Amino acid sequence: MKLVVFGLSISSSWGNGHATTYRALLRAFAARGHEIVFYEWNAPWYAGNRDLAHPEYVTLKLYEDWASVSAEAVAEAREADATLVGSYVKDGPRVIDDLAEAGIDPLFFYDIDTPVTVAALRRGDAEYLRRDQVPLFTRYLSFTGGPFLHEVLEGELGAREARPLYCSVDVDRYRPTDIDPYLVSDLAYMGTYAPDRQPVLERFLIEPARRMPERRFYVAGPQYPADIAWPENVLLNPHLPPALHPQFYSSARWQLNATRADMVQAGWSPSVRLFEAAACGAAMISDRWPGIEAFFAPGTEILLPESTEEVIDLLRGTSDDARRAIGLAARARIVAEHTAEHRAEELEALVASPARV
Image 1 (cartoon, helix red, strand yellow):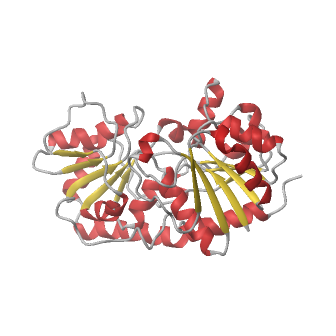
Image 2 (cartoon, rainbow, N blue to C red; image 1 turned 60 degrees about the vertical axis):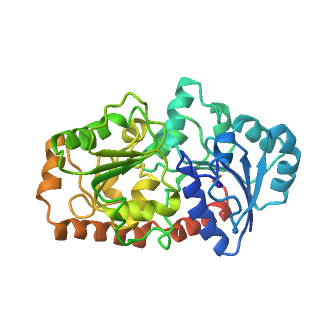
Image 3 (cartoon, rainbow, N blue to C red; image 1 turned 90 degrees about the vertical axis):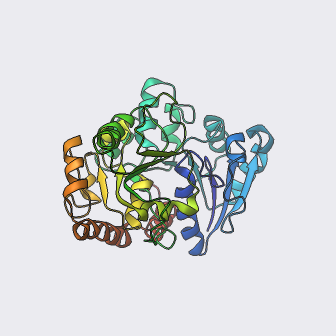
């Protein structure tokens, strides 16, 4: 099978979760014997932070603007067995229009940001997808599952068929490692700054750090405003290279997961960082959202505190044996259900099966 993908980025993981998602999924998809061509706008901020310039499992085609590559890309899609457009693609509406007008079929949308996309469509300011384009796709593949698929994507927005294609993780790359003394902490968090995630970070990491000055906390991610009052025992690293992510997840006693507000409201929206940390055997603390129990069992595979005080009690009162058991159980769940190989097999079935009539 030949698959043509238009995605935000596979070449740079700087400030986005798309690259690691595409890398894991498409590496596993290629390993099943398929050919992949990946079109990526050569964004200047990614060009200066490119950590996978030549992925061996896809043919990467960087372009400066859509007009300069549209004829070639449409011709490539015509020759393919399936074409997939991802969320946050530069000039997405023009890309989708050109593909649809050329009669590209089957044509899929892969939404790595489903609740954010839907919120933007409702406001009328989505930059990468118009509301009238939703019914054009053979299937709308979504990072979000649950009732949201039928009630919102199909019922409200008119998707012909909405199916979940959750994030996944390459468990050969994301696995428990030796502890890195430079990455050791009592509680760590990885994620780009987002205003709607900051209250979770404040309640579950920053405030505990203020009250526990003898403990060490670590935040890895870009774009945090300069006016955030970080306690002295919180280390902020604007960019941790992907090669060090497993060590980061393995070197903290606990890892924090914080979820975007739109994803909390939609539910059934696990993040790639959550899966990667779990694959490394990290003991996870997370905010609560509908459907989280479909991915991890609360109390045995993940902990869901409600307050700063509960987080502090966990940090102080949980034995190392109990903490390690939670991490190992989470990794076992990932290996059983959420590897890149699982998702590649699902993607293969989704792009090959007949369209819903």
